[in-house]
Length: 493
Image (cartoon, rainbow, N blue to C red; front, side, top):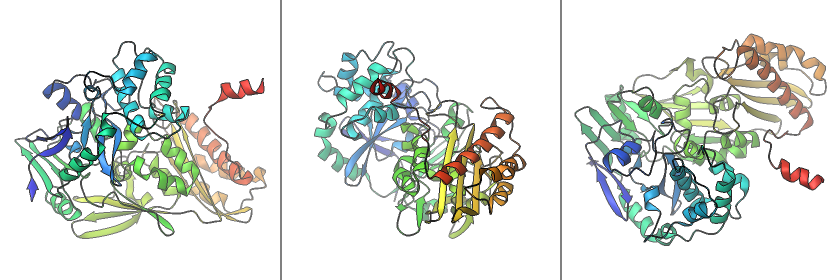
């Protein structure tokens, strides 16, 4: 069975939309077709958060709400979800608790960014930890830029409104919404054709493999955090789009055994806990992986398949020895992740072949892992350099090493010369590390760009290696985020 329309839930009823252009964004649908202009367009690239809306999806027996950037999300991607915008929050003329708190705290001035901030806080209200910490609020708002008010009153509004158990219309109406969204999950393939092409959302891997084999020129979309910019910034005319978000099982995460297996469409938010369990540094890297909006949409497989030289996840996974499984038609193959990247934006992927899953070995007792991201902004910024280091130890000596960097070459790349130079070195003899530090210069010849100079990147790469060796030698991790300084000073006084 094939369905020729997407279906989603809004305003207490099912909505069907068909015949739309494959590249239609959710923001354009809301503003241009529905004439609901509360959702704003700011940067049009998923950075500022003015376009934030919430999507509710059934997971683990309840409806979970996540923030997404409507400016780079394709309309077809909301199939099966509940759509909530800023217009939907007030009930019978009464403001939502988040809106009331924003008013009381004077958290809005011009109002342009306010709808997106309110929607991010709405998802925090529904899903946030209790008791609510200031750091959790800052993480939730990392993808929302306020251009005039300043963040203090906004954070105070969040602490006031989001710290208690939700008691709004969405939570009260949860049983009916759960039943309604469950009904939308019909297991049918979606294929919406138009004069310009098609938008397809296969329901299973067999349908996906067959459709992609038939249309190898189609654009595969997972979270659309990268492809969305092709539309909004590159003005790309996507005639054929295959969205992977409905493929049953392709987002499965298996955390049993000696390796972690992550399906290609598992989101960064969904994979966070499993990745963080491998090592805290990997968890911190994922926490800084874009914004809450980006982590809710972006996928592990998409971050790899787009082949970006500045994608933060690939270097970490390469250092851990990750393998990549690909499928073309009925055939599958497995390759080391580092072999997938051939050149800038070129991967070892045949026409009609797609990334299926990644397998990440867990650390053994004698293995140490460190990962560091260096960027101009701490939150939601592209890396100037990102380094990942796995050291296999024989007592206090290095028996083997796997090192990978992003932002230092046209692809995520291992530091083979540096790895060789590390073998046999003692963690107790820092004076002997010099040759390994110098080998970084033979492994990478980075370029100058607006994020950093080549000289800066080379120096940072050497320093990150020294930091990894020092922390491994001492067994201590030095925090890189400056938090609570005011409180620490006050306590000292």
